[in-house]
Length: 268
Image (cartoon, rainbow, N blue to C red):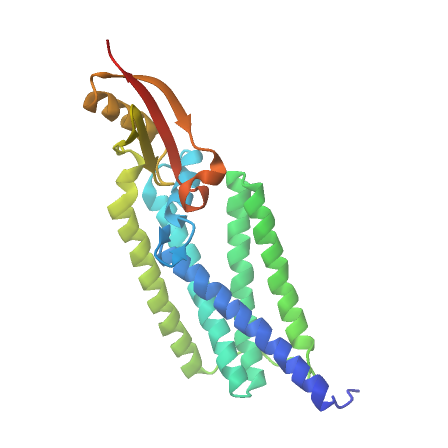
């Protein structure tokens, strides 16, 4: 038998419910933005997920960018639907419809668990133990959030999780639009920037016989080799004496970009 809650206890429970719902809505909102806006921009510094996925798959021998971008688009779709359901849960909570809020939150939690499971499988495959730890922690955090929320002022048995047809239609349409925007951004980025994995980067002279080369996270060893070859072709009277790589803490864009300096001397 349940006993009536005091007004103070009810208010504190409501505050925790709002905190949980709003947290997950904002969490997926910014994760989705991170998929659409790759890299560092004005007022936004994010991880270049396009390059990250492509490097991951390339490390397993799957060099085609279409495979990596399809996986990223699938992950973006899961995140878009998660955002929609958590946002719906917040909206119903504001309207004091706790039963509907609980249903939307449950579906958002299921999608969240599916998303982090998908990422964890990839972490095992690519051997990224740090990312695996992070995604595993978020998996249990999502599950714990559901357990906490349903126990707050839970004075009735669980209801069958089934959304009304108009709400299902609205959620599907909204999430589909977000998926379309995310997928378009992913494949547009691939078409416009994938060539950076191999294009040479011009060297910038920063002192007497000192040149700086900086290129994005997307660039790898091929970029380095082509950049050196281009530098030699552009400076036939210079001999390269040393190549110095900037320490990791001093690199641009949260260490996602490689910077190195070329020290030369004039040929006799």
